[in-house]
Image (tube, rainbow, N blue to C red; front, side, top):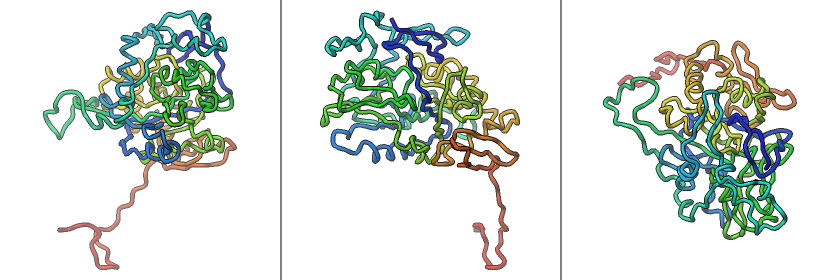
Length: 397
């Protein structure tokens, strides 16, 4: 059987195909401490990519409220229940089964043989959401969890007893994509130049095995076109050195797009690599599933770690503490603050950055400056009374 090395779970694992990493890998970091669920990202994607007949139920980008929101309905509960409780060793190695291992198949026997009816994808643990599961993308929005707060004026500690947080999601353009591994006619492929996972709709034969295999629910079936469709990573913009549509329109400036490498090849001058590998503040979503997703999340600091650990793996507490120190202004984390300031500052992809005494500066692939942001937000205090116009600037009633 084919084995590949998944650095996110710290070990080799089974996969339908041999390891074949792209020349560059499309990557992203989302800061969950800043998302306000304005859904601007959702609407910008919807109006750009999924506004045709048969796509009414599709949201390639969605924002769900955790712990109760999910689109499609209960996608995370369903797959986690099938895999069971995730267990990690003290040195960060995942000891459970991934979705490629849970059914205990021999992938050599399950290999594609030119006959799609053999359905080699059946070896991948997964399920098909029902039609009604796509019908309520905002179900559970703003519903809190935890216990009641005795006082509304003071919260003791960083973790709130009553909490929720927003989780924006797009296709993870996974290194070991389940949709590609599950397609019986190999209509889904990973581009070598940028690692974006695309679906050739002309080759799709409507088996919907990609829908069943993707545990994140990001491969969707179009009943009008009679084929599956998915997020394309805004590849036309990426090819021009720009960020995807949902990144550019994010009001909260929570998103950073760039290239992400394996730990042994990380470039600390590149923003995404820095956040993932150097600062170690950005973590993958459900790494135990085994797909090596390439969208990373800075976990919210107000949420209890037991919930976040099952979602982002065993390094949550360290990531939270690192973020707190950067937010406090510790000089040791000045570089991290610089990258966080650069998030959402330009429509161009930032491929390198530097920090001066006053600014964080972002550069594109050619070394041209595409972003400058102050390390300290300038403040101006105006006189309360404007003598020239004989008016007060502030309300004095």
